[in-house]
Image (tube, rainbow, N blue to C red; front, side, top):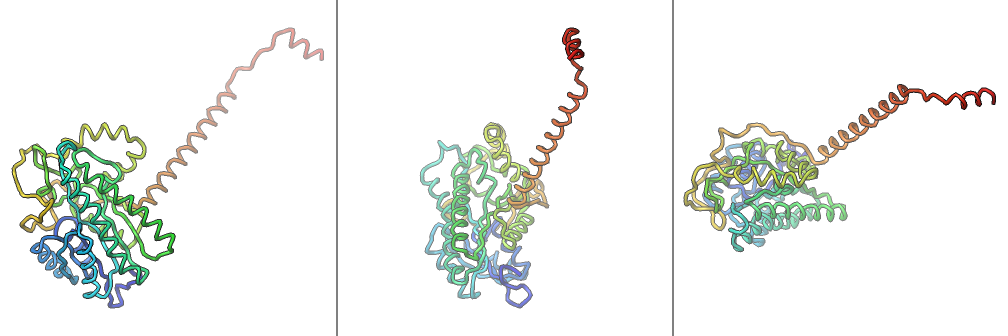
Length: 360
C-alpha cells in the first residue's frame, strides 16, 4: 500500500519528479519506474527529457514529458495539470531540481545568487504549491523535498546553494505544522543527501581555478535514489542519507565552531580536483547540451551502497546513548563514593574525649 494506492490492485501510483532529466532526479524517476509507477518528468532540456522518458519506459513505468523551468510557478501548475489529465491524479511529488554556483561570496554576482535561489529554493516552493492544489482535493499525497547535509552544515564556496537548502528546510517545517493543524492526510518528508556522483560537477557555474568534484566520500545515484523512494513510501519527518550527512547534522548540533574551522581547512580544497579548470557551458540559466544521464565522472570513486536513517530514529538512538552514558557515569560515581567511604581511615579521637565518652 502506497499512501492509499495499492500496487497490486492494478492502479499504480503516480509520481512527479522535477529535475528529472539528469542526476539524482533521473535516478529517482527510474527507481520509481522499476516498481511500475507512472512518472511525470519535469526539466528544462527537451532532448534529455525524451531520453529519460525512454529509460523510464524500459524500466517498466509509464512516462509523460513536461518541459518547464521550476522557477516559473505558472509552468509548474500547468505541468501538474497535465499529469492529472494523463494519469488521473498525483500521489507523490519529488522536488529535486537544483542549480549552484561555486565561488567565494565576494565573487558571486547578485544575478547568480538570485538564480540559485529561484531554482533551488523557490523551485521547491512552487513545486510544493502545484502539488498541493491537486492533493488537497483528495486529502492525500506525499511531497518529498530533496535536501542536503548542507541544509544543516554550510560549507565555503557554495553560499547561495547552502542558503537555498536551509530555506527549503525552514519552509518545509512551517508547512508541516500547518498540515498537522489542518489534520490533513497529506504527508511531507525531506531527504538530506550526501555528496552524489552526478553531472552537476561538469556543468555547474564555477569561478574557481580548478575542476569541481563532490566533497568525498562520494555516492552513486542509484542507491541514493532507492533511499528517496523509501522516504516517499514511508514518509519519515526527515531521512538522513549517508554517514557524512549524519556526521554533518549531528556534528553541527554538537560543535558548530569546530566544524567552522574544519570546513575552512578541508571543504575549500575538497571541492576541487587539483586539475586546472577550463571554459565550458554551465546550466545556471540555460540547459546545456548533451545527455549524461544520472551519473557523473566519479564512478570509480563512488560508493555503491548507502546507509540511511530517519531523523526520529537518529534522535532516539542519541537519547538512548546519552541516557545510558549518564546512567553509567552515575553508577560509576556511586561506586566510587562507596569505595571512598569504605576505605576511608577511621578518625582517632583524642584521649581526653575518649575518656569522657567512657565515663558518660
